[in-house]
Image (cartoon, rainbow, N blue to C red; front, side):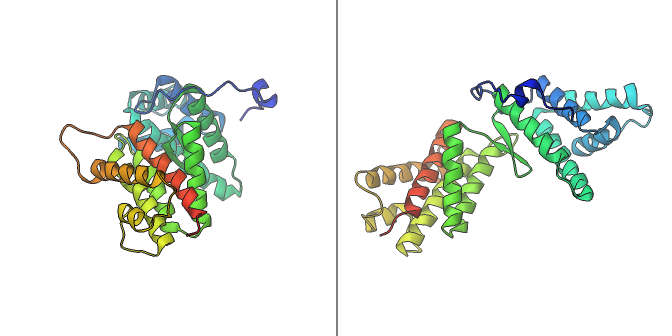
Length: 270
């Protein structure tokens, strides 16, 4: 890519915008994806191959010239596809870049592509981010911090099953074109239940039962509050009611609470 811009060289950055876009891929995002790839040396022909594969459409056999023919075709594919396909294209581009980097023994294109897109997501208030080669949900800074800390604490304490459930909660929030909010709640509470079972040695107790049987698990009245939260989460995730659907705000609240309480419990000694 070109040399660093003035703002990067001098470490100037605007404040992150409030997240306002998730189920959308605005035109400026589509432009940035293509332009960033071009800047990294990925021309219209390889871009067309990737886009056609993701969108399951055959390339135009009548287009031979790179500019403007193939480039116009690439732009038509990008600007004309459904919003969630744009994120599929971003992931596919990143995978191809990573493969090329591996062949060269380098890790430049994929990393720069991910960095550029993450900056754009933050600056434009788009609720997605690149993590380990995948586009996953992005929450507020507080949400990101508590979930990251919770996952790290679970892994460090040797609780891979609980960490996996917390990861699955994020994956549920990241599903496209529609997020699985009940699934996020289910996995978040499952993560917390795993920790409680491991901590108490009671492998069959639900979280609600563990809170009753082991009053020292949480200080009062937090144990009562969590018991009520557990009941609420169970209703939302397991006993779906007609006309009642969990929304993103509720799901993120419960995932964040589960992550924070998991971090606390990993440091707990009964």
